[in-house]
Amino acid sequence: MALHFLLLLLFAVSFVAADEEPFIGVNIGTDLSDMPHPTQVVALLKAQQIRHVRLYDADQAMLLALAKTGIQVVVTVPNEEILAIGQSNSTAANWVSRNVVAHYPATNITAICVGSEVLTTLPNAAKVLVSAIKYIHSALVASNLDRQVKVSTPLSSSIILDSFPPSQAFFNRSLNPVLVPLLDFLQSTGSYLMLNIYPYYDYMQSNGVIPLDYALFKSLPPNKEAVDSNTLLHYTNVFDAMVDAAYFAIAFLNYTNIPVVVTESGWPSKGGSNEPDATVDNANTYNSNLIKHVFNKTGTPKHPGIAVSTYIYELYNEDMKPGPLSEKNWGLFDANGTPIYILHLTESGAVLANDTSNNTFCIAKDGADPKMLQAALDWACGPGKVECSPLLQGQPCYEPDNVIAHANYAFDTYYHKMGKTPDACDFNGVATISTSDPSKLLFPNAMLD
Image (cartoon, rainbow, N blue to C red; front, side, top):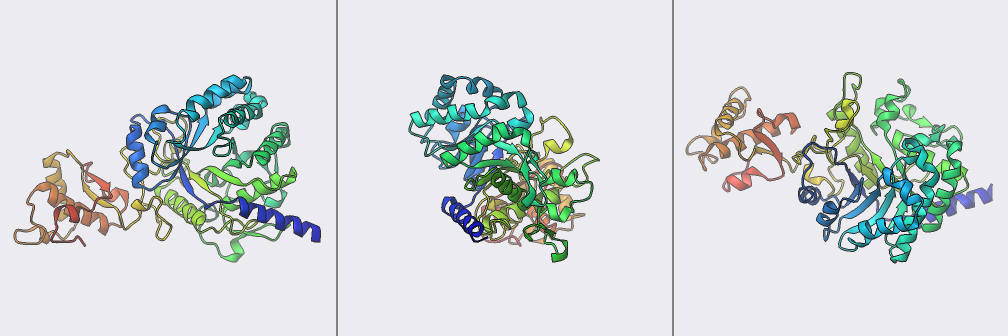
């Protein structure tokens, strides 16, 4: 028993030593009919103070746009290239030369994902996955970049079987011929296990066994917490239970110092008729609580105080994604950079803080038709019940006397009054959410309430 405790203690110490400050990053998918230009993407990242991103490829224009920003970038070897790279050291070397060496250090590339969920989506490539990873790593060693750039591969959490209670979890044994050499590699190179965790799908597939609040990180009374009968650890959310299941599954194969990074997690804001819990409120609740959970350094019941850095899925809604309606609605922003919802991130650091309730405003869209603006202004000051008397002649917000300035006042007042929900800033398409305060731009002598 004493030896077991000592091993656990050493395990915890090794995690603390290896752990850096936890971070929240975002995934950038590109299946949009109107994909923003890379410079626009980077402008949004800067405005939202997002310092970590994961790309699903190694797009040259995006890597150039990210240069000299300091943003930490994870690039990806696409699944369709794994077979070739896994069978040729020179192909791997060329990939690293073209997509990493050519951009580093101007572009701060910190990791390479070799594929994504290969074991579950492309099983015919599984046999060469570890070879591909090792060839990519060897190319980094040859370029003296192996200390700066980690190599791993994102795994679906579905490969973890019997995930609750977490202490009984283990990886699908049929995958051990790949997972054992993968874990060997991760341990020997100081890399991390990349895991995609989707409590939304766990909840949807549980047939009512998993409560919605448990999936959304909502506070639970003690009698509603899930208890691991072997460890007596209490779980208050699906995310922590899945992370700990991964730790236990790693330990089951006798590896004890491989940290976990969550490469994808999120919640859809819209779904079809058979997806009633894909809503703006639930997506906001999940992502807001996830961000706070990481930054609060709560850790998991198995590793308290050791936060798991996480990349949110995803930056943009991808309207070209195949599948159910929810597949197109995981984004934090639309293609114009307008937030799908305003994250509740009070006192949770600077990341995405430009979208907290204190820093967003509703203003007239550039180029909006003046007649439509006037109609929207009339509605706001009439049926919308905005107090528009400050816009009258002689009042503080009369100047400048034009429809754009007056619409900005009315739109933003209505937006605040309605709790700053995205629907409250539409006005038949002539308004948009902004981080620019219209009162400071247009009414230097007055402040909007």
